Amino acid sequence: MELRVSSRRIFRPLLALLLIGGIGLSISAQAQTQPQAPDTMEQRVQGCTACHGSHGQGTDNDYFPRLAGKPAEYLFNQLQNFREGRRKYPPMNYLVTYLSDDYLHQIADYFSKQRPPYPDPSKPTVSADTLARGKQIVLNGDPSKNVPACAACHGKGLTGMEPAIPGLVGLHQDYISAQLGAWRSGTRHAKAPDCMHEIATRLTDDDVNAVAAWLATQRAPQNPVPAPARSMKTPLACGSEPQ
Ligand code: HEC
Ligand code: HEC
Image 1 (cartoon, rainbow, N blue to C red):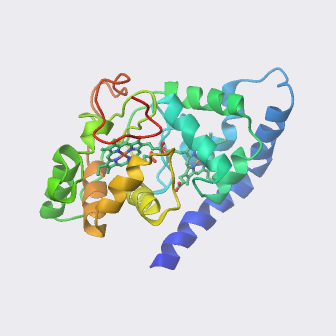
Image 2 (cartoon, rainbow, N blue to C red):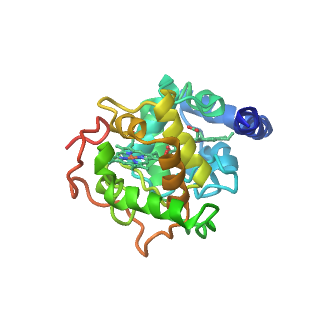
């Protein structure tokens, strides 16, 4: 099981990367030199769209996340995390190795402003009890385990908060559980204090399954923009979201 999941995560995307390798390289080359006209952001991010969709909306691949509409500073932090090894996924680590902060900011701004429609929510694949447990944790937390409500930081509409908390709608169930798993096992890190590490390690495997399953069945609200900065007081300190 483990082997099947990890080979799917690594090798299928690697194949995609090989196919678009030429484009990926030209992205890094452009970052090193003065861009030559014609040079639009659409062209520069072509190497990203095979995995993230033409407008960052994501694809059918369970592990390729939506980027569109997430706060720019969140996206920038992630690009830096991949460049500096705080997140590990070989194709992503490779693509951003030689890109400057300035260039990463431009890419992050570009995807944060994209507004492609959200996919239809997934059909539930777990029991009604599991879904109810997931909903409970997301909206109310679990005080017995000191788990705050996810919505306290990610927002009631689950669209995140400026400048650096991402929305949780429009993501695949497997992607969400893989990210929570990565925080638990220490392969994903955010700026200290890493509130998501704290929270993820208070959840059991069953909690993670329940939360990921429920989130994936949620429809994005009418106006899916992140809440304004400091509109919610986060129940834990997060280094990436200064308050
Ligand atoms: C081969 C497929 C592939 C390509 C090409 C690719 N990505 Fe990714 N990207 C991924 C995967 C898979 C993840 C999630 C990795 C993980 O599990 O942490 C990811 C994660 C991200 C994230 C973090 C998203 C989040 O919500 O935390 C950002 C930002 C991102 N990619 C931007 C880019 C940009 C910009 C490019 C082009 C320069 C690019 N990606 C090219 C597959 C790809
Ligand atoms: C105290 C505030 C806070 C709470 C509560 C919180 N989060 Fe987060 N979450 C964050 C921050 C900040 C980030 C961005 C971390 C980074 O920069 O990598 C984040 C990122 C995430 C991501 C990564 C999304 C992506 O696109 O890769 C997931 C998944 C996530 N949170 C799920 C949850 C779940 C599930 C809960 C409830 C059990 C929860 N969070 C509760 C602050 C919070």
